[in-house]
Length: 316
Ligand code: RIB
Ligand code: CA
Image (cartoon, rainbow, N blue to C red; front, side):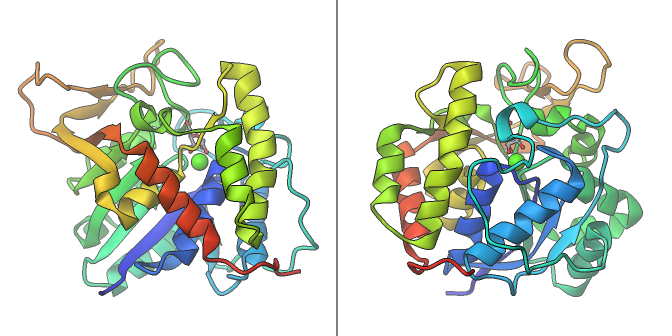
């Protein structure tokens, strides 16, 4: 079976780190590169974290590209309260050997999309700044994108304001550019990611795998679940970003519905809200396939399969 070509754009971030591990190890996916922006932490930290994870799992061959260090229009928003000062608090990593490429992420996205024949899926698990800037710099690449799959948004309430989810609120204008690019788009929002909480039972299940990836998962979740519980009071942290990768491996893990979804750019309390017209009140064309349900059991099986694929020893 031909591998699905993907570009992963992220802001590691604990859940981004798990998404990277699933994407890099999936037999059905070809990870062409990882682009990074500021989001959960500043760009310097999110790039370093991306390189740390790839080195740890023995995938230094996957190129990493540093991108935008701030949103397109608004002021910078980070999430140190969840991900810590380093952006990946918890695990202890060996000295870092892997470095990002010298090319800017936006340049890499444009160059790569131009070079392929429209068979690339772009996955974003952070603010959509890099992809939006690439679309503004080279609008013709839109037709070369097979589908945009993003972790972001919500049909109901947000997680950093009553109205908005972090990845969208961190750069609403960028999300608007991507949602209006006219390409097939799957929105994996809080509606489904909040249904896969990484409880202590899940952590114990993954710990039993005893691979380098499962050990990193356990160390990551130790911090991530603690901060999520402190803020939201949940039994486990919602494993947001890996849902996008699980969906690419097995689309049946999600139920999606086509809807008109628009980004609220008004500078009031609804700034960054994804207005999803679930009941077609407006009669406007659908702009997104919005995830409305998740097969949580299948999701955790996919996570377990992904972490089990790696060797016992990390790359020192
Ligand atoms: O709202 C959750 C999203 O914001 C996740 O991608 C998390 O990593 C943060 O970026
Ligand atoms: Ca993220």
